[in-house]
Image (cartoon, rainbow, N blue to C red; front, side, top):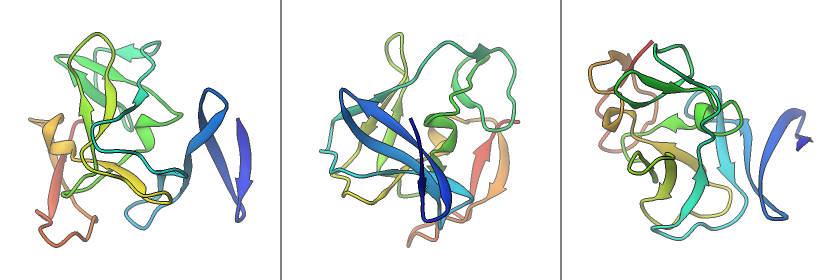
Length: 141
């Protein structure tokens, strides 16, 4: 589904008939994914589509296993890094999924700690501005 928000184009992710994840301008970096509803701690709220998996890293692709990188232009590739992330990219099972690490408020940006999945990547300056920011994160490109 495609809509407009404050002059920015916004993509919505639908679950059933409820739209609750959307892309908009981020204070962390460029664009990010935000929720319009509360997400409870431990909830699996997004399953990553596996129709575009590659064996080499590319910009904006997510590392999901040994020599496995997924392109998900709807949600995952727009989730920004934070040193104090509210979400975990769970790589157990056949399909990666986003799981809430804590309760996430409506209007909050969805974030992951890239250092948990991008081991061995290049150091990139972190812009999360969290209290315990490590000042960098890892990214494979």
